[in-house]
Length: 254
Image (cartoon, helix red, strand yellow):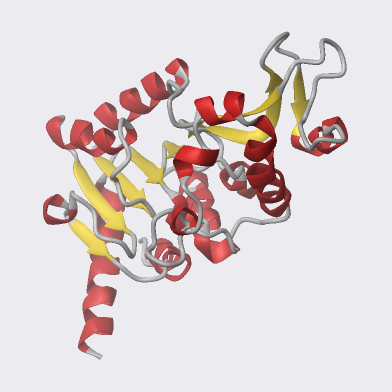
């Protein structure tokens, strides 16, 4: 009971911070999509990397060295992601934007759910499964079109130049899209409140964005079940279900 009362007080406090802020930006990670049925990466025993070594399937070297093995991991995952839909946490961010309370969403997620929910500006710093491109000629295909490109060996191949198809997501060993990370930094530096939702804030350079907000005099609000390096510096810290608490924050707005 005491814990529930404390959470309610923090929800009210966060609603107050949002109502008083002039520029609010959201930074989201895998945890916001867990209620949609998408597992996160690092939860012990449950996260994706608890079952698969990312260095074997999620690096650019692995893609070129063992393209078949790469797609053996990503092909069913893409099929799974394509079936998922936004949850109440995604919709809460859309509602904040509709009310003029949220400037943009910066996301580490590749699942497209923010766009599907209706968010306006979504900065996808790790890319998206929405498209895949030929690594040779640059031709591009939508997610729905990629399945038809797989050959008998289970490798997606360009029908024009026979080059290898790679999803337009950032793999380990690749640089983040320059325009996206520059826009993310601009938003972080200009925010007087950053909402960190469903992220452990451990993967750089994105994990450095909250520091930009703090250094510019802004505040952090963290809504995630995992611990983060910024917990002690957050103005508000919520650790419940994001699909319950974020809509509750919106409902508490004046």
